[in-house]
Structures are given as structure tokens and as C-alpha cells.
Image (cartoon, rainbow over all chains, first blue to last red):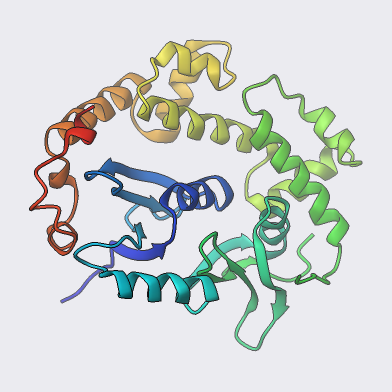
Length: 144
Length: 150
């Protein structure tokens, strides 16, 4: 019986830049940053309140996993904003939106009331996009 | 560029600016009265709004921010006393007490734990990576981990 997901990937173009984005802009916690040979690191972060989920900031580098042509295609698709990487939960969507915007995060969609939730969409530094939504009992209405 | 239209946007912006001020000045003596003044709120109104958004009073948030930063410094190998003053505490006793309360272990145990992990990583970095990733990336075949040992 499967019980949990504890490691997930986000493919990124530059690990240094991704680390700065996820830690200093999104507020994720850096879990591991382990050199694995020239030009490669095992780099994982966790959402602040979810320490048992490690997200691997996986670089697209030419090698065993990504032959040159595949790497080029992946980088192209990421930059184009093809990949949605999931839904991130916050306490207050308006405050989170204002904070991320103040930190220079690029939003594709501001907080908007949809039939399923109030949702905003933003891109990471590589081009991957995320949905931002308030937790069910969080502030999504005019809470202040 | 996406633009937001929602009620009381100006209030959100002021509270967020106050939060960012704490994030950027956590290591200084922060007077929360000044922050509420800068945000054009009365102190009590400011605290109420801040708590309704972040679930913590500004003072509680400042303390947790300092302890988060302290964890980062200790992970990087900074001594406990240096860490205490670098994150804005005046007293080692109050720093250690709060750290233990929020993290569950004392700063010195936290530091020792991370130093031990670092030492293990430098000897065998592959042991910290799930086998499937190491295999897919050819890291098992790569015995040259000199970079990691430095």
C-alpha cells in the first residue's frame, strides 16, 4: 500500500538560480546541497510546513539521463512555460501574491475567484508554472 | 503583466511591507511600534491584521524568523554564540531557550547533528541520494567526488 510521496522533481535550467528562487523568494527550506561531481549537485528543498516532502531541483544537463537532443528539447519546453508543476498552498492568497510580486516573481494570473478556488498562477525562474491557492480554511476572501 | 483587483489591496500591501521589513531586518533591534507607525496603523490594529494574515503576532513572527535564520547559520557550521548575536539576540540563554522551544533540540545539539551529517556527506555523498536517482544519472559510476570532499 502506498502511503506517501516524499521526493518529487522539478526540472530547472540553472540550479544556483533555482535555489535562490525557491529559498529566498518562495521561502522553501534548503534540505540538501550535495556536490555529485563536476557541475552536478543533489539539491533539494521543502515547503516550509512540509519537511517530509523533498523537491529535487533537477538540472537539465547533458549526460546519461538527458542526451544532447533531449536536453535541448526539455530546456526549450520549460522556457516556453509548458510544464505546470503543481498547486502550492498558502494561508492568505492576497498577502502571498503581494509578497511574491514585491520579490519580483512573475505572475501569469493574479488572484482570481474560480469555481474551484481563488487561484493565482506564477512562474519560477526557469519557466515552470504553479497554481497558488489558499488552504481550505485560509484567507481567500476579504479577510482583513 | 497580471494585475490584481481585490478588496483592501492597500491594507494587504502595508502589512506585507511590514512583514518584508522584519524579513530584511531580523538581525537588528526592531521596534514594532515603529513598524506599525510606518504602516500607518495603530499598534493594536496592526497586530490584529498581521495575525489574521500570518497566524502569528509580529513579535512571534520576528522570533520565528530569527530562529529560522539561526538554523541556516548552524547548518553552515557557524558556532552557537556567533549565531546567537548574528540573528539579533542579546543573550545566549534566551536564544538557546527559544531555539529549543521552537526546534525541539538545543542549538549545540543541532550544530553537532549537522556537522556529523556534513562529515558523512564528504565521505560518501551517494549515500544521501536515493539509488534510483544516482543510477539514472550515472553517479554510481562516477567515483570522482573530490569536489564533495573539499
